[in-house]
Length: 560
DNA sequence: GCCGTTTTCGGCCCGACTGTTTTCAGTCG
Image 1: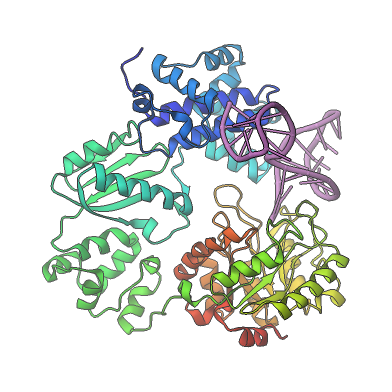
Image 2: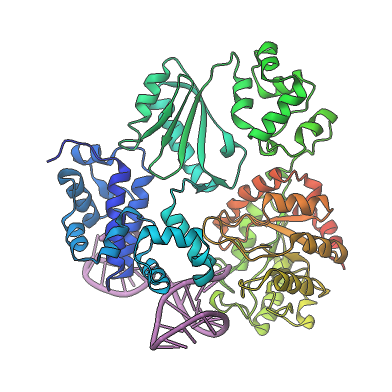
């Protein structure tokens, strides 16, 4: 029995290392994934797993932890090690064993890089990554994998930060003596990838609050602390920042802690600087603060230092789109392709959300893996939707498809079929490796098809996984404007594509944008909040958003 | 290894295409 308590991160690292070693053997891949899942679960827990074990708690109550992993965790906590792990480690080659310190690296892929480039160490791996040789020889995705494995990355997706925020906030209020807590920083600005989860807190005893946070998830390393802020390394990787509310009144602290550096600089320039802020206070709210300096309230999502301060002074800030402005969904899959609910189930769910219409956009034939819909089956779906519209009250089902843009820029259904649809969503799903010029030409050619309406997930990026294909977005926007085509903000939390920056560009060019979920089940309609976040960051008003229009007006937009 | 459960073992997507491949792993939704 050891006395030193292990942090959740240290326990998770051992399980991840075991998964890593198992993956180099002919082991059941589902077993490997089980260990990885359990490790990930432990990293997000606010309770100390070490304490849970010593208190004889039932770990199998947590999702992803069953009898075997539960006893492995007990062994780790009580002996400080894991026999199975040590055994595999002693049998592994030096190259593989040395990867244990990098639990995010996939040994099989690393070994491929080693072989290809004739190297055998992490140091060499780093060098070849920095020199661009890995990307050159093995592609962008491999380079991305290695980069995330060897560099200390703190980034997490916004939707993961949402879960984490709830847990940390509850901990601060219930266990760390905070009287008032609010999330601030890039999280509150709804930035799609978060490196630092920040809170403004009001407390009578800040040092005690820091001490309590150091016990979060067993042990959370304190990176820096002053009498007004503290920075921690959460076991899930992301940084946790806590700022003590020092200004009289809550409003000024929220302004200071929410805006980006660029926003705060522009704000200071427009209002006489931070000294003037303190002198003019206290402010109970941010509205009071902005109002005092003759500025309209600036929504957190806009506080990036674009032109929001000038606009707030002129009174020309857009009234940002909100969830209640959304009248329908324009990108949704069903059991006809790779969705898990039928057309009727999706329609019922859309109606329950108060939507007026839902477009059914199943995949086209080329996308085999998603069971793309044959021409015959699309005809059947068209007739089925006609029947459904005769029967269903309170929701209109739109006939559509997510049509593949083929490598040569042609669309994956013939015009005679496309003509029968109310509109189309057209997307690139193949040949991501084309060069920027070719990829751009491919999309421009597709937009010349008279049935092209909405460009689906314009860059194909998967946040923290894949950079997306390269396109000249300005040329594509220009073409869309000429040809009466539109964009979507795909709300899938790991796409968010268009990005806020690209959506801002499209909007400035006067091209309307759909906020779509790409839902593959009724549950996924809920992800629209992430698309709304990015639309608001792009400064979109409801008049800029395609699916804020009633169907009659939308139908006019779709005429070409 | 976990889960759910028609409570004892099967499912946990998956299948065609791509590439600079040296005979198959990675990739796309």
